[in-house]
Length: 110
Picture 1 (cartoon, helix red, strand yellow):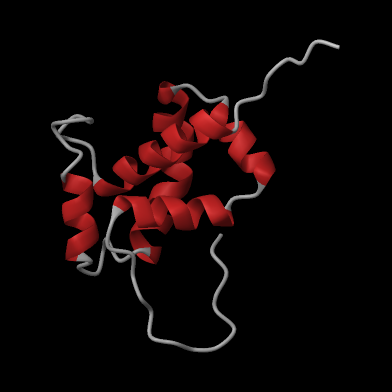
Picture 2: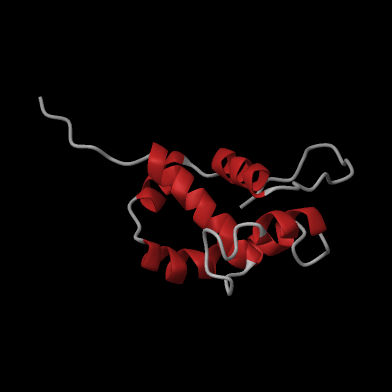
């Protein structure tokens, strides 16, 4: 999913949900963004969450103490999301909301 850097460098982990969303948006092919834009929140919760959550947790340090990112995710809980949702779901839903606003297919009348 995420491409390794060509030259080894110390890994700078993103510190906010917005930074992770930007990274994911840049990494997702247009086709995948368009598909995500058509999903309902229920479909997102079931199929996309299962496919992406583990990768997001591993890639962005949610398993390894990226406390800044965890705090950023937690700031959404109880406000925009239910308090039971995990940080990976917060990231996925923020990605989905951003994609939904920018990649929706529209009918063009000719």
